Image 1: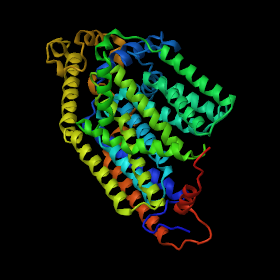
Image 2: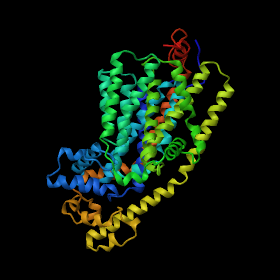
Image 3: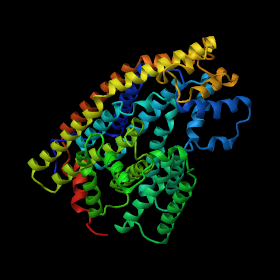
Image 4: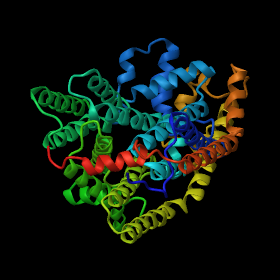
Length: 515
């Protein structure tokens, strides 16, 4: 039996659940701290038209229909975001963007922790735990701050949740099985979050073709399944409306497209050298296809997740070639970084199994991790200023709206500097604020009226004030999990019953190289 003494053992089921909870709390605490510092009760930018004029106003008039929930906003059919807004409206009794931010933080923290766990299944022992922790810490940094402090951006988090759930089911689900059907349903739901969700099923179809090439899928049933995924992809893409206003941001040449793809692949580095960050994912992809693992092997989830990330980069490069690196897209790109991180650890572990020299693989991993850490510092150093700018703009916008509602003086929203009005269209904002339906939905912080449900306000204040408590509890739980894992590592291991890391080593050594 081969035993790796230097690695922690993965926790058992109870320890694994504790690890997930600790990572969830760390993420939740980081999001709550950001919301507590930078959030404003004022709706901002697209929220006025999408949530106020097109959703809440007709809802209060009694004219909202089911079909209205599917009406696109720009290129996107944000069905689930609209359900979120309506649900929170009925919980709070008003248009409560802060409560929506809190709900978004919970969804995001759960999704990121689950994705980190799913990706790390290809690893053993301490490297699996390290990959999950590092993925969580990278995501805890507020690179995608405007998603966190804009209640309206629920769809970015739900896109991740539904798309990666689809990947989870479809990676090893046989065509036309219940698991496959669940994956297809999640893929369709991802399209009802954002237009790029139309490519979720395309990524699955591409991964299934790779599995056929590796001999892990075969037969007419599987080919019909791929055809169905392709047909659904074409149908969903056909439902994406053309928005002339967005044409100026699209790729107008192949060169612009390639430049945008390179920028997305290189993020968070500020030069094209950042494309070095995707090297581990590329090698993982090639080595996995060379190994031809069984359909149940967790490597296929990572392969399909990688294909999905590439599809999202293609969508951004086509539709937003002139502005590909916006903060709102970073939550998607961070999943790609997590895949690369896990891939780097996997290559290190795989080479250890194959007996490659320790010094060279250690130097390679160290160099890559160092480059990743250095690259992450570039966008991070600008974050405090950008977050503070956001806080000041939304605070000024809230005060101007509050003054207009109190005095009726249009100078507060029509003749103030543009950055002090919470929309690009001040005239339209005045029209909306003059509508009784819209006024009745606004936060008590803007209208000086009593909150409809006091318990909601108590919950929000308590949740946000305890942001560092969530962080602290998560950190303490994580320390306890690591201490318990270290104790398990020191226990004697039965020599006749390979498990954990030795089982993975045995599987790598005995894995067939061809179909």
